[in-house]
Image (cartoon, rainbow, N blue to C red):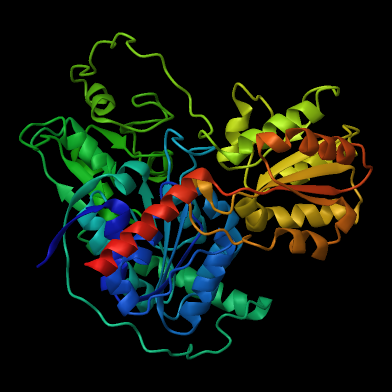
Length: 539
C-alpha cells in the first residue's frame, strides 16, 4: 500500500477522496482549512471531478452537502468548532432528515484558543443531534475513519460527525492508503418525502432516530476504534478519547501503561467496555481533550461509588489543551516540565503586515473619530481584528462572525451615535449582510466600513465570495447610493479618505465605506503561484 506523510487534515481529505467522495463544502477556519485546500490542490480530485470550492458560510456549506447527499453522492462538510454554531440549524435537523448518500461533518476544535474565541467541544453537538461521532487518535485513524464513517452514514442513513482538535489537524504522521472506492451513482431517496420536515414527517423520522440509538451503541461496542487495553495494576483505570491517548502513552518509554486503559474513538460511549473497567478498578481517571463530556456522563450513570477523576475535580486543568506533562501529574508521576526559560527575546504580539491596506483604513478612521468620545467602533472576525492592538487601538469589540453591524446598530439604538462597524469583505458575505438589512430597515445612524482586501486573509488567502459584489449588494439591500463610498487606502489619500469618513459619521442614517486594496500577502501568493505555473509549463 502507498504510504504518505500527511497532516491530520490532509489524512481526512485523502481518506475522503479514496472513499468515493463527490463533493466537499466548507468555509475556511483554522484548524480545519487544510482539509478543503488539500482536495483543491489534488490532481487526483480534479481528475475525479470532485467539487471543492469554498462556500459563503458554514450554514450554506452544510445545506449544500445535504443537497448532494439527497442526490445519492458521498459528501463532506468541514468547519472549525465555532463554525458549527453557524451550521447548527441544518446540522441538527439533518439528524432528522437523515442522509441518502453518506455525509461526514468534520468539526475541528481548538482547545487553548490558539485562533478562536472559545474552547467549545463539538462532541456536545453530536450528542445533542444523537448521531454517531468519530474522534481519531492519530493520522492513520483519521484516514481510516472517513471510509468507515461514510459506510456507517449510508448503512443507517444519518450524518456522522468527525471531531478533531488542533494538534491532530496540524501534526504529521505516515498514513497507509487503503482501497480506492468509486463515487456513487446519482440516486434519489427511496422516500421522496424523507427531507420534508413537516411535523407529521419529522415526528416519524425522529422516532426512527431514537430507535437507531441502540444500533449506534452496538456499533461502538464492536468498533475497532474503541479498544480495551488490559493492565496488571487495577488500582486505577484510565479512559482516554481521541488524541489524549497519545499524551498518556508518551509518559511510558515502552508504551505500556500498566493500568487498564479504555481508548475511545467512537461514540456513543461503549457502555459494556466502560462497565468492564469500572468493575475491575478502584478509581477511574478520564483524559479527554476539550470539555468533560465523558466525565459528566459517567458521574451520572456509572459511578457506583467509584471515584472518578478528571477535569471536574481538578486532577487535570479545566481549560486548555492536555499535554504529556499534565497527564504525568494526573498519574502521580514526576512533573516533567522544565525550568522556566530566561526571557532572551521580548515577546512580540501579532501585528498587521507591512503594507497591509487595513493600516491606512485605521489611520483615517482614528483621525475621523478624534473629536468624539472613544468606545464606539464594533469590529468582526478577521486579520483586521489586530486593529485592537497598539499602535491603532481602533476597535472595541470582536464577538463572532457578522456581529459588528448588529452591535453597532444596537449601540446606536441605545444612544451611542455615531456608531461604527468594521467588517471584512469575506465576513460581510458570510454573515454581515443580514445585519445591514436590519440597519437599513430602521435607518440606523451607523457607519459601516467593509474592508475589502479581495480575499479571506486570516486563513491563508482563500477566495472571497464578496469579490466584485460589495457595492451592488449594499445597494440591493437598500443603502442609498450617495452614501456608499469606495476608497483607496493609501497614505497619499489619507486626507481625502478622512474627510469622507467625517462626513458620513455625521449622517443620520446608514452609510457604507469600502476601503479597497488587495491584501499584500495575497499578491505575493498569487505571484508565486503564477511563477510556479510558468516553470511547470517550461518543464
